[in-house]
Length: 280
Ligand code: NDP
Image (tube, rainbow, N blue to C red):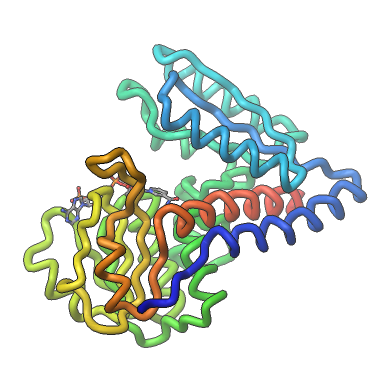
């Protein structure tokens, strides 16, 4: 039976440390503040924002929400980002995705000042990650790297297979793993013989959004399994992209869903806001 990587507990530890750092900043007269922009009324986004707001409250970070109507124009969105860029009391800016289809998220992310880009989506910060320079690392990959660190899972020379190549998870993860000296394979919906890549991997990270996609016959014994997916199964229960019940019998380490990568993502967002506030 695999060791369960407890993201909930680690996230709590991280938030406790950040709480101390936050009060030290306040003693120096800096009041860390995160601005979150939500366009439209997507229900899932509202839940994510509520969770981020709660985490901010716990750490001591001020939280400000900016709501734009579903039919808002690109110009209005960019103008708001510029206003927040120029506000010295705001240290971090987060644009909640998804955006309504008529808006250009790439242009919006490019407009967020790299110094306030706590999600790590501005191309400047993406580039810095590629160059292995100090930067804002996007929160989910960063959280996964912290889990490896905490559980002494050294990626040096390991075969890591990442399933999923999104801009927010898969791609930055590739860089994070390369920076830790792993040999990385990336799979996606056009990959042929996916199992060959997962069976050969010491570490498999799945981020595709398909319930219980990774089965035990797709991995080698004692592989480390990281499950990023958040899905609902046929009974409405939250499940990951990994068939946890069976895969956990063969893996050496595994993250649960819920309680794995999810809480770490939010903890690393808090970390990035404190970092942005300290850089001021
Ligand atoms: P995207 O939809 O942006 O990307 C999904 C990726 O998976 C794409 O690269 C796609 O390939 C690939 N893919 C889809 N189906 C398959 C398949 N059958 N075989 C191989 N590859 C496949 O998703 P995200 O990266 O945003 O999110 C992925 C999952 O992670 C979701 O469940 C999401 O809810 C969750 N998530 C969880 C977070 C957390 O904190 N725990 C944070 C962010 C996301 P292609 O590029 O070819 O289309």
